Amino acid sequence: MHLRCISCAATLDLHERALACRNCGDLLEVVIHDVAIDPADLKHLWLERRMSSSSRSSSGVWRFREFLPGDYSEQQVVTLGEGNVPLVRGHKTADWVGLKNLSFKHLGWNPTGSFKDLGMTVGMTEAKFVGANAVGCASTGNTSASMAAYAARARIQAKVYLPAGKLSHNKLAQALDFGAEIIPVEGSFDLALDTMLHSGDDVYFLNSINPFRLEGQKTAMFELLEQLKWQVPDYVVVPGGNLGNSSSFGKAFDELIAAGLIEKTPRLVVVQAAGANPFSKLYQTGAKELTPTEHPETVATAIRIGHPRSWKKALKAVQHSNGFVMDVTDEEIADAKAMIGRDGIGCEPASAATLAGLRKLTKEGQIDRDANVVAMLTGHALKDTDFIISSQHRQENAALAEVHP
Ligand code: F0G
Image 1 (cartoon, rainbow, N blue to C red):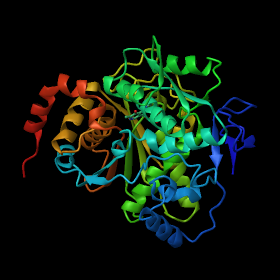
Image 2 (cartoon, rainbow, N blue to C red; image 1 turned 120 degrees about the vertical axis):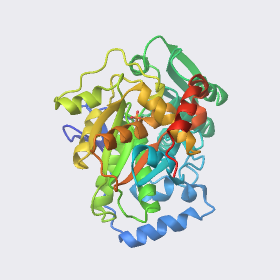
Image 3 (cartoon, rainbow, N blue to C red; image 1 turned 180 degrees about the vertical axis):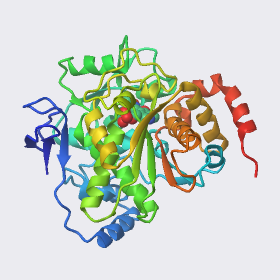
Image 4 (cartoon, rainbow, N blue to C red; image 1 turned 30 degrees about the vertical axis):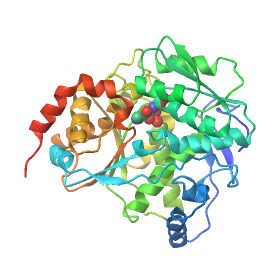
């Protein structure tokens, strides 16, 4: 296995600690060698591992390790037992959007309450493997919470660059709880990321431009398909911020097809917030280059990002899967969030962008009522309790909007 530039295909050793191509500066990806195991045997092996008493094998990320980089030993893996999260059917939410088959895969039910843990277990394992003394990230809150926790497990110092006053208290509290050093940056996530990348600090960077992160995150699709008994859904819907997650799902689909584990891909739908929608604009206009949003603004602070770094990877994922990209307003996000709450599931605002997007698509007749749809919920409801309290009236509206049988 090795690293490869997504533009000029230049290669690097797997453990080079590089975030960008030395030739052209574009992003890197991990190239997984062909997995020469019979698909039926793999499916069986992965299910069996789930019952294992080994921390590596029972992890919902590492049980898929035939498709992960590194070949790390049981002792080298830094894990908190991430993954293995349920797929929950939406009832009231399905009626509300007018779909017959809607399920939520709740990645917010991970150790630190977000999907970031899936990537962080791989990123932190690699950081430890290459001997990093400190790790760093910029974050809208969830990456920092996750990185801080996994760094604590790995006994590595954590430095987090955060947009001052722009992330939820609950997420900040997590980073503090896990002992991270907090560096507030006056400005957006984008500025925090630039500040960190140019800080000259000797830290191992753990934002999703780090290709190891995406390797862990892609396993969400392996697990989803396993839960669906390898029956491919029609659509997978995901919120888009820095676009690491959507990129990782696209990579998963390509690898699953190449290995003969599935025969077609679901259509990937990426939903952005209207005030932070550079990727949606790129897709709608067919532009060749992304134009960053100067002052991104949305109540869904997790995806308040104006300059998504992984847009090229995400665009490839959308195109390969015949998917599309859209955006929804803060009002639509808030209503959808309250409705997910009525189903007893709950999530943070950014996650609800998925349901808001689906409502728009069904209203416009763009998705068939009979389609099999999986919406990815990326963060736990308790990630942003201020939002819930300040928008309590939405719950009352949601109760009124419930479709009664
Ligand atoms: N949903 C939640 C809850 C998030 O925290 C994020 C990103 C996203 C969706 C978007 O994912 O960036 O891969 O497109 N949060 C990052 C952070 C940026 O710092 O926690 P993406």
